[in-house]
Length: 193
Image (tube, rainbow, N blue to C red; front, side, top):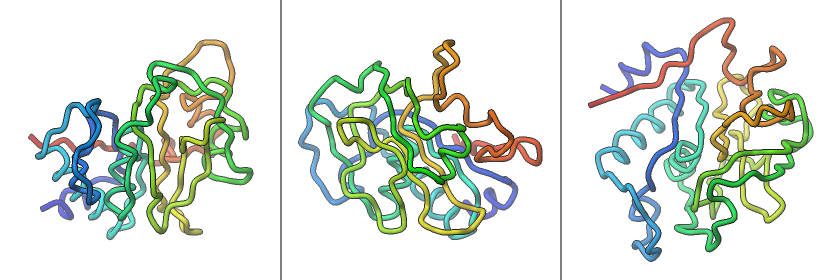
């Protein structure tokens, strides 16, 4: 069923939301800060991501979406990063030179990446390559470690615009070399009730 749905979508966008149940990455819940765990949501998104990877469907995974992708590929999460430094905060995020994310944003430095998260990638899944971190080492961007055109791109920030003209995740479409080429196709989020 999932593969049939994805066959109708040229791209996949995974958005933010509540936390992923730690049992999906081999842990018991240990952080009191865990919130918004919905077992059906986890099951659907993990199945959709795995099917999208099998079908080489391009995807943009944002915030929880990046965490779901990492877990779907065998990675783990920090259940709580132990600080509120990333909760409704702005951070500089250094991007790897030559990465698709840096090319899409048009800069190797995001000066005001807006963050609303208390979790982060812990063990990054085999096959994902970290391409962006904040100064405290928290992963904010990654890409599938491949040379293909159908790679997932992932950002931990919410992409909220600052209005000051500095590069941020809101600018993913700014220079025509965007992640999901909006000129040629439309990203289709899959919603299942």
